[in-house]
Amino acid sequence: MGLVAALKKLRNEFLRKVIYRRYNIGKGFYSGVRVRLWAKNNITIGENFYIGRDSFIETDAIIGNNVIMANRTAIVGRYDHHYQQVGVPIRLASQIRDADYNWLGLNSLTTIKDDVWIGYNTTILSGVTINEGSIIAAGSVVTKDVEAYSIYAGVPAKKVKNRFNSDEELSRHMEFYSNKC
Image (tube, rainbow, N blue to C red; front, side, top):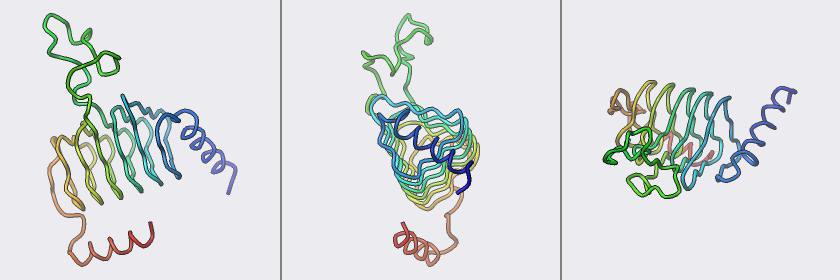
C-alpha cells in the first residue's frame, strides 16, 4: 500500500472512530472531504460504505453494507423546522436540533439497505426506505419508498426500470452477492 492510500485509510479510520464515534459505523468506511453526519438519535452504517465529497446525512438513518453515495448527496429531515408555529418566522421556529423539539419528524428513520448506489446530487427525505440493490439516478429527490433492485430517477423520483434485464440475472446477482459479502 502506498503512502497516499495509507494516509486516506488512516483519515477514514480517524473519522469513523473519533469524529463520528457517537454513531455505529462499520469497517471499510470512506468519506470524501466536507462530509457531515448528524442525527437526533443515531446513524448506523454497515461495512464498505462510501460517501462522496460535500455530502450530508442529517437525520436518523440505518444504512446497509456496500452502499455508495456519490458526491453532493444528502439525506435530510422532512420536518427539521416547526414551520407551523403561529406568529413565529420559520427562521426563528423550533428545530429538530433543539432539546425540547416536540413536533413532526422525531421518530422519522431513513433506511438504505445493502448494495445501493445513490447518484450525484441526490436528495433523500427522511422516513423513506431504499430497498436492496437499488439505484437512484443523479439529481433525483426521493420522497417515497424505493422497490428492491430498481432504478429510480426524477423529481420526485419514480421507478424507470428494473436494475437487471431478467429474473435470471437478478437471481445470479443475488446468489453471487450472498456468497461474496
